[in-house]
Image 1 (cartoon, helix red, strand yellow):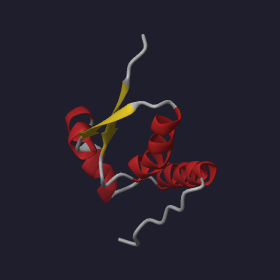
Image 2: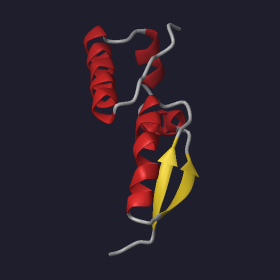
Image 3: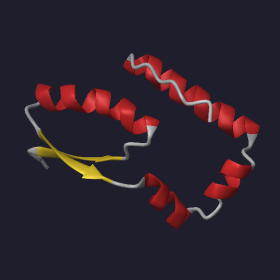
Image 4: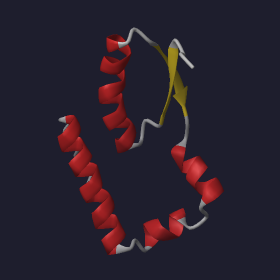
Length: 88
């Protein structure tokens, strides 16, 4: 199936969206494909599929949190995008 557009689902508060955004524009230009911007509230999706998301934020698992942060930093290096998270 050959589509002439990409649906790009994004959440402006997500660092993962930021990484993807750095790649989606060059990708669309390389392949001459239109981007259809599809905003989504990822937190709303999380809440509907995982009711423990807020409990995790109140009492995060240190190992899972470190792994997630390390994974984000690794992908930011691969994509050559600087990611800094706020202290709060």
